[in-house]
Image (cartoon, rainbow, N blue to C red):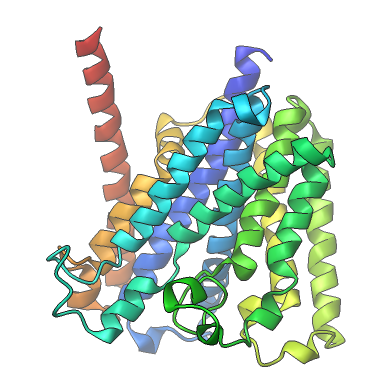
Length: 364
């Protein structure tokens, strides 16, 4: 693979990552601050925004799985000798740690005497970072099984993804507190407040792994229209299947479950993600370079995610904008704050990159 090809590949992946994280930043900001009277699907602009917000998490998770697996499979070594295994385990532990740290119930660190049950319930909930952390762990497990069983990444990752998708409507209706303590039970469904339990959300991360493996094993495939059109076709088929599933009410046995756990919603979201990915990959074919800032944003998704959440929702150690302006600002103010948040995150990664370059110059 030539250096040019590597650079083009990074453009394609970084466009996906930048799009996903910027969508999440503005989505959290608007949702946290916009006054309830403006949150009506009767407003076309809000209806479109609300739809895209529902697609943001699947895109973010799918992209995380794609990037991780792409980098993992670029290393042409057996699983035991792959340096990405150690990095992946560290990433898994870091993501889970940060996920709980953002919801830590007290600034006293080890003194829980004043912590209420409600605060503990919030602390034990499973959010995006824990979900992606475990998603990466299961991607490594799938990669290991793929090598040992010789099924191939596509089949192994797909089966692993279905392991989390297929039972999700059933698991959504089970009271897992009867079988596990709350910190574990929260990984199975959202009944106790978890926003992103493993079922079905880990399925999006593992689905992204299929694409990541395909890109790594076929270095030039992303430069063809055939690749982009395949993504568009597969995504369209999934959306049509989802529509048929909904029309004929094939998921009627799961009507008690929320939308996120029904097959038609899951299939639709994966289809939409594939179409979005197909569009981005098609656009990237005609681009030789992108602004450096988009690459930096794509490479600093974790930092952006953590910092913007602390600013918006606060933590045990700092108040957030939500506590001051929560669901009370008009449309114009909300838009300005959202743009300001994106600008602040952009400035942060620019300054961080300059600091890194300066440190390298000092070392050399």
